[in-house]
Amino acid sequence: MITFEGLGLDAKLVQATNALGFTQPTPIQEQAIPVLLSGTKDLVGLAQTGTGKTAAFGLPLLQLVSVKEKYPQALVVCPTRELCLQIVNEVEQFKKFIPGMHVVAVYGGASIGAQIRDLKRGVQLVVATPGRLIDLIERKAIELERIKYVVLDEADEMLNMGFQDDIEFILQNTPNREATWLFSATMPPEIRRVSKKYMEKPHEITVGKVNTANKNIDHQFFVTSAQHRYQALKRLIDFNPGIYGIIFTRTKADAQNIAEKLTREGYDIDALHGDLTQQQRDKVMGEFREKTLQLLIATDVAARGIDVQGITHVINYELPDDTEVYTHRSGRTGRAGNTGICMSIIHSREIGKIRQIERMVQVPFHKLEIPAGKDVCRKQFFHFMEKLLELDISHGDYETYVPMLKEKFADISKEEVLKRVAALEFDRFLKYYENAEDLNVRERPREFRDRENREFSRTSKDQGRRRDTRGREFGGNGDYTKLFVNLGTKDGFYKASFLQFILDMSDLRKEVLGRIDMKEMNSWIEIDKKAANQMIRSIDGKKYRGRSIRMNEADRR
Image (cartoon, helix red, strand yellow):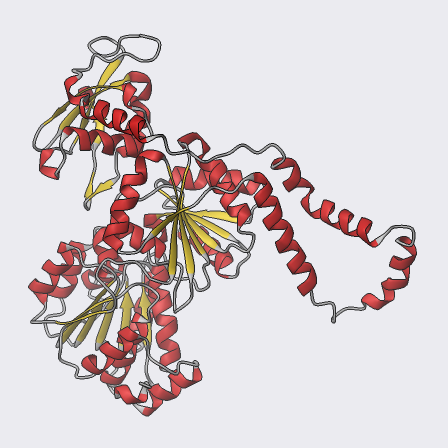
């Protein structure tokens, strides 16, 4: 069996791993630590989140830097405040038996003056977010000339968040570094370009396949109509009474709206999105980590860098646009060898997208039925019975009350008492789900799907003169407005695939569309005026292959 000592770590670091209960290194640690201890090799490490990457670079850094020198020798750059603090907390545990070793976290949303004072006291290792680090560089408040080792952690996340220029600026300001270590869950082209530009023949380590999902996660999807998406979400939560999870939405408005609705209905949930102040964000994350909140609902941007242990479920209220985003979302569960479940609520037009993601992440997806109301009640009932039987009554002076209880329930049978206990606990559930409808969208016979596909492929020939079910004529009249979007044939679209894309994004039916005029760089879409705002809200500002989509009314450009 491979041990940490066998990887070449100093006795004090091995002592720290033993104290933490780490007996055997994870695959990324086993492969990376011996290479990094050589000290002068550039490295690209590809591994999913939750596989022990912090120890993979943190332990070698602590061994390589000198305690005698009181200036920054190693720099770790990561995308978010949460991840920055998490890395520092882990490194603090690793350096427990190394007196004189100092680590400082620098990040936005906290006093820059206090962080400058911490740096001046003497530090060997700095962990930073890009924005705050650049602020310190420009103020000449941090010395980077003697930095030997630079670590880019969750590099793909930093690029997704638009930090490419910041990363390059930081690398340019560490001219004397001996090694650059880049860790990432995925390998998009931008990462490859950074590695070629700033690294010299980097040693590459891949744990699992690039862009694949964690094999410990069960990937499930549920098909419902757009108008039943919220009810489906509620039902999936209720069907998993022990859930401790994150729900992902595309927009902060959806995150806030759903959190408010679920809170009103008695769920322990809060939202995490870009409109929160840092103080509000810290409060929400603190409550979630302490499990005061059972559920967190978040946008992709707000959730980046979150690392919380024990998450049982990730729920995609809507699928993300990019496969890599799906990998990051699902990677919040099934961490450190545990199992997890990633659920996606989709409509029937998104089944093709599910299959595309399935091929990309190379893990099977399972189509499951949204539970019926009676199934939810049954699951909750069994969960309640298990909690009742496992309840610890050894603490507390319950014996004092037993005579009174016996007297009170003397004329009531055991069965009657159990019924009353169940009614007390489940009355709300039973009433809510008494006449619950079937939320599943059933797959139509093949001949209907084939017919629809043929109609779909003829869309480009309609020239905007389509009739709805009442025979009202659309197109070429005042019922339509024209939208501009900065996507075109250069993005790999043809008319049918483009139509499918905008319908999937907006949850609109194709009957609201008129003529689509595609050019190389841009496109123009005729759409029923009543549906235009919904399409703009659904698409404008979203990402397609890493590029922001811009959509607006053509006459307002």
